Length: 434
Ligand SMILES: CC(C)(COP(=O)(O)OP(=O)(O)OC[C@H]1O[C@@H](n2cnc3c(N)ncnc32)[C@H](O)[C@@H]1OP(=O)(O)O)[C@@H](O)C(=O)NCCC(=O)NCCS
Image (tube, rainbow, N blue to C red; front, side):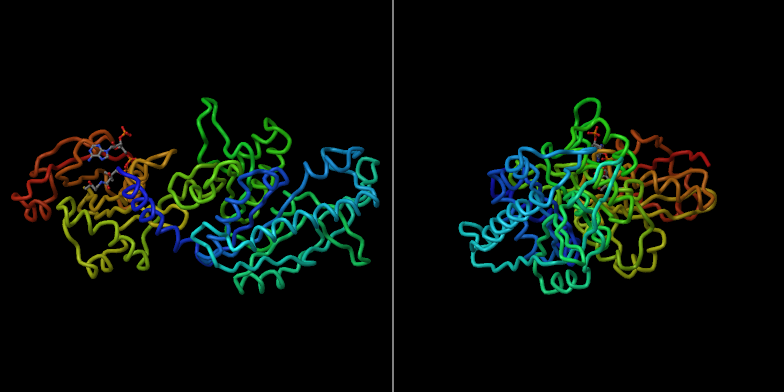
């Protein structure tokens, strides 16, 4: 495939994600390490692109390495900096400078990018109220604080005007005292409070790996929590925030590399991503179809009908039969479907299709295989003790998943009389265990 063909294919593949992400709220964490990295300018371009595509963005920044450089004499307790009043003044200066640098990057007109002349409004303010962490284990944490509340209403109003909200890890008490907050925790708390759809953490490394050093594209919050103890301190703090947020209602968390150009776009606009996604939803890859899924199903099956792989179905027939359909959904995008029609004590599996951009891609289990498992469960629930399928081009795929060749005569009587001898489909059958 040449570059243009690859670009066209990638762009077409990303279109379902564009509509899935529009209007959603993402909280993005950029630590001090990401702010100091040469790739920051590309990350800013990609965030600007998300903003233009209608994603509501809250950016929370950190500044740990910058504070470490400036406050050589810092003391820590349980990994948390103990902040004196004098240090707090220095910290607000450092955060002020980091904020100004980010504002400048978002304001440069983004020359040499497709976003040239696009105006992005980046707004920061006194959205966060804080309280002292107080005395922990006998240690007074002085100006180190924790989130007391956030002015979600003000943030939401800004997001509704397409502004990007920028939040430093500083909060103020009612007496006006500034408190130093743990940036990762703040990002997680804001994501939870805003009912954000995603919490995105830039990190190095930008992925977790399994025992064979292979990337884990997905992990559940429970598994992530268990792994935090093995991780290096900074990565552990970020993973703890991701696990916390996804436990407490944020639908998805993402760990992404700040050093890799385009990592954010690859994670958000491709099926398998490039980082590690944290979600409780792994097991919910498939679900029963609803009427509003018909348009997506049509988009997946039409090319296959035109190629003669699937028997054509009108849109009206699909609507009438929607209760028989199961779909696979990734990140809000319908990527595959199949239908189960009970018949006597067996059931017919039909219309098995995965969108061409998502075939054989999903790392834990193939989407086609996940649909088949869901179809088998649905058939058993409807009282069937076997499943049969008529196919012209996919015999091997079904045989590899436990189907055996059968005769037309073994089909239920209704199906035998409708069998299309000209099409000559192979009949495959699988016994189901209740
Ligand atoms: C068949 C189909 C549903 C599989 O979807 P999928 O998400 O790629 O499935 P999985 O990831 O679970 O399986 C992928 C494996 O099946 C293999 N495979 C895919 N299509 C196949 C076919 N027609 N025949 C044999 N093997 C096939 C892949 O090579 C891959 O093998 P590997 O794991 O050894 O590398 C998908 O390819 C599709 O939609 N095909 C067109 C529609 C169709 O033929 N439907 C059946 C009509 S009844």
